[in-house]
Each structure stands twice: as C-alpha cells, then as structure tokens.
Length: 281
Image (tube, rainbow, N blue to C red; front, side, top):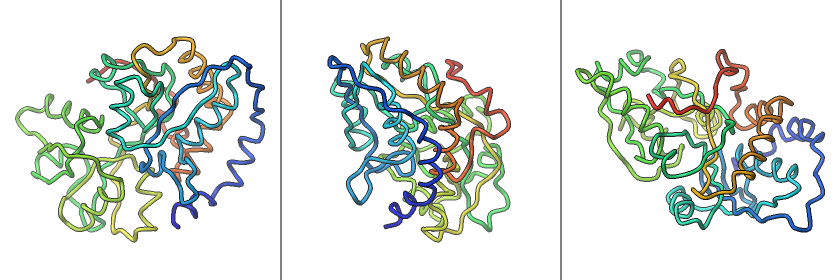
C-alpha cells in the first residue's frame, strides 16, 4: 500500500516532465535487450502491488526504452544476488540497482560511461545520537555499523576508509541481502549504531515506517552506473549513454530524483562534477 502511495505522489510532476519524451518507432529489426532490476530495491527499483516494475531505475529504463529505435527492452525483476549471477552468466545484458563502480566490477563487467544517477551517501543514525557525524566518529567511538553485502559498493567505501586509516578502523562486517527498510530498522531498534546508505531511501521510508532516524552530513556523492555483461555490444552502451546524458540535460533525471528520493541530487553542491571514473580510492 505504501509503495502505491509513493507511486502516486509526484506522478503528475513526472508525467509533465516526461510528456515531452516522444517514443520513437522501433525498427522491425530492433534487438531485444534483457534488462534486470532488483525486485525489492525500493526506492531504486521494485515490483509494486500491481506487479509493475517501477522506482527510479525502473521508470528511467522505461523512458530510455522509448527513445531507442534499434533496441527494445525486455524487463526482468529478481533478487540482487540473482541479478549478479544472471549478469555473470550472460542471461541478462543490463543490470540496474543503484550500482557503484568498483575495481572488481569494472574487471568483470562492462559499464555505462554516463552516470545513471547520483547517490548522496550518508550515515543513518537515531535521532538521539549526537556523537556520530563522520566516518571518523564511527571508528574512534567503536560504533557498530550495520553489516554490508560484500557485493555492495558501500562495503568498498568503508573498506577504502579502513585502508587509509589502519590505526583506527571501522568495524566492517559482511552480510547477505537486506532491504533498506530492514537496514534502517536495525539502527532504529538499537541493534546497531549506524548504517551507511543513500539518504533518498531514508527520506522515502522514514515517515512511512515511523522510524526515529536522521542522517549525517554527506559522506560523498557517488555516480551510479548500469552494469552490462562483459561482451555487451559497445553500440548499445553508447546509445544508452547518449540518452542518459540527454535526460540529465533536460531535467528528467532530476525529476525522477525528486519523485523517488524526495531530494534533487542534481541540485546538490558538487553534483555537476560527478562523473563515472576509475578512481577506486
């Protein structure tokens, strides 16, 4: 029910924003592209109560599909682990799940040259927590961080911090798949002191779940990318990159950000300089 309400909120705004997107006529020889998203990755992508794929990435990919004459998307929604397995085996061509680019991913997959979005990464803490403001506070205070899936680039962010601060490290523990809601509940309950997560998910879920949480200042702005199977057609990647760049310029990405994250990440200081790069540190 909540997801349907979120879907309705701002739908008029988004409809006005994307109304100017004219669907191109598909070529009779258009190549089918197997696209996969996270079935339970609200607000980034998820399957709603009407069995529709939606969320930021879900809607963005549908807009891109409308603009490509030589390709047509076939959408799949599975678990995050199944996404990675399917991409690795070649069952899927393109995967979208608010991915950050890591050294390991760049070696294993092809990836978009244009960001599919921007992640405003924050520390999520309880409202009565006044000692955690930075990653350094987590380390010096020996605070408990919610464990992170090793395939998640948030794990890499903390791991890189620890490599740079060998004398005062954050307690980083691996974990399996977790939804944003479960991660936030683990902090709200007092089981953990903090989570590191994009603030958009907190803004979307905090009121609905009645969580007593707040966010720190920004840990950093990170580009999100689409991951492609290793032997994906470079022309496909180039075509999608072209549309991502155009949709950023015409404000569609900002509109989707406002709708799904309750924040215009493209209006944040430094957002304009966020690029896909291979600076793993």
